[in-house]
Length: 104
DNA sequence: CTTATGACTATGA
DNA sequence: TTCATAGCCATAA
Image (tube, rainbow, N blue to C red; front, side, top):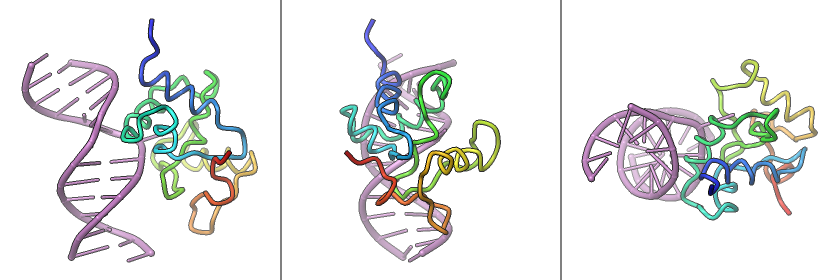
């Protein structure tokens, strides 16, 4: 059985090390679909979660903002998890992609 | 087969 | 700077 688009997205997100965040477009680009950022977001929604090996909380918008209204345990929970891993946040409430962005 | 939806991104005002 | 709109494409019905 071939891995679905979602499973590939999960595989890429799974490669994101702790303390780093990747944008949906970044994940899509790595998986070979630079125009499928939205579908990556869909995959995160359908992801098994951190318990399933998919740190979807490390996936943020291209500008570093997080998805509000959708959290694992409650609002602000995603940000708390990232801060706990050492991700740098800006006073605007966005992630410092230039410092904690997923870069090899 | 077509239509509708959406955890996005880029662009314009 | 923020806000609004268009385009993009996989999945579900």
